[in-house]
Image (cartoon, rainbow, N blue to C red; front, top):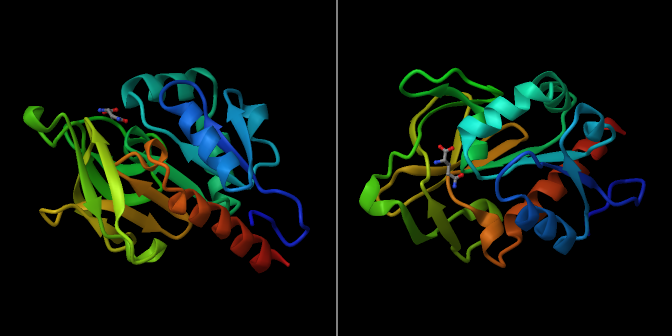
Length: 205
Ligand code: GLN
């Protein structure tokens, strides 16, 4: 269950300025946690974990700055709240973005290349083995997905695509996937995020 030591439900924020927000809200509810839509800095108060969804990272980066969300999201991360970025959310969390874009919330020691799977692969699906969530492979839905073009020493690869390209990475309590786990009924990644909240609470007590 998605409870902390206190027994209350974990509150998981979803950046709700653009993109696949509703699917993440539903997934959070499905794993027994409380979803919170985040548009303004005040919406981040009291969150236990945070999700940056898929969408269009150029639009999301503009809105993050327009609403003054950059600093408070970074503060939430440094307070130890687990984070999950999916697709565009992974781009927002990358330290390095190939071809000139400035990083937005550089919390992951990786380089990403936007839309780099190529036109013919604009969208594809693949079964992905991700031992951290269990033996059963996860069905990965990739939509104009970023390629993880380099992984630095601080980050860890959690899963690769059928060609051996990293598609899920973690650095401490920050997780990111090139695919969209919220678009399938598989809730194991959301469950992992919420379990990490429990681990944070345990460390604090
Ligand atoms: N191509 C998008 C971007 O660069 C990401 C696509 C997605 O999130 N599904 O921001």
